[in-house]
Image 1 (cartoon, helix red, strand yellow):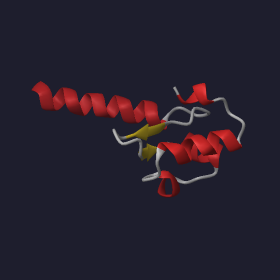
Image 2 (cartoon, helix red, strand yellow):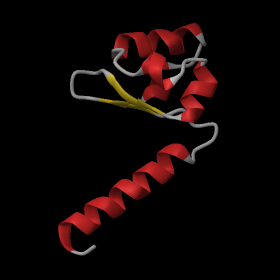
Image 3 (cartoon, helix red, strand yellow):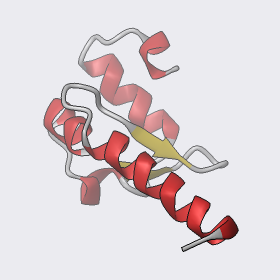
Image 4 (cartoon, helix red, strand yellow):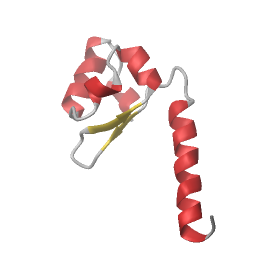
Length: 77
């Protein structure tokens, strides 16, 4: 692949590698409305919620999960 399509694919591959390969670092991806669109394996392990449970939930739900776990809100930044 060459050009923009090849660079977009390479960027997506790097993102997926980082996203999936970050043990101990729960990562939630949010859309512009604050809804969870992706949830990595570490987030599932740390929270106990599978991606199927988390995707589609809003930021308020996500913050409440951290509050319940006594995680500081600035950890969401």
